[in-house]
Image 1 (cartoon, rainbow, N blue to C red):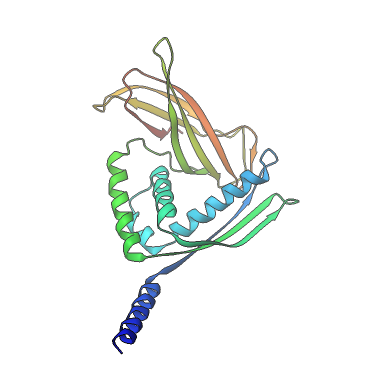
Image 2 (image 1 turned 120 degrees about the vertical axis):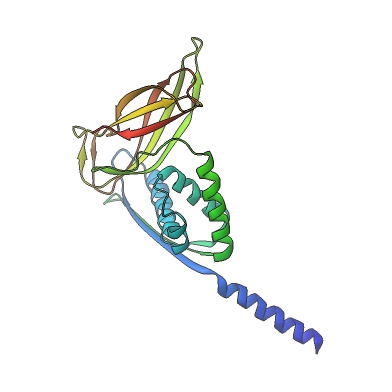
Length: 233
């Protein structure tokens, strides 16, 4: 009788834990350009569906209200997706090659208490170590991700870096459209060293909703510790 009671308790406890899980769903439709492969388009579409799924969760929305930096948000989403999404499943996958359209719908489950604990911990940690300011968005596009690929020092002691951006366009945009930004470089004590301007509109025509990667090379002033990017126009 005791063994039966223990077994029933274990089953009820297991069901209780299972009922605590929250279901999340996210979807995304991506129209790729002629210079992109189907494989790249599917990867971008999948990642955007994953992003939409995490960003739609109420706990994530509440915990990141004051975080407008896309790079920080993207890092949070990657961290949470890697270890705290359970039973991640592709509900629907569709590729229409004749229309250059890819579609993904994803589903996963989270343990709300653990998810919230890790999210708050990561928000605090990343805000403490992050300094570069994101471009965020403008009239033409939103910046989904911004990162630095690394620094290279040449024999003449000049230091170079490459800043890359993932842009999603809000409207049809051409190369002739300009989106000028300034980057200011600072030393470790927060004093500005130098700055320059650059344009984030890539070559070609970008349709509304399309996603593009843009990278820019910069020469860093000696002693650069971090940088800020801000809209010039």
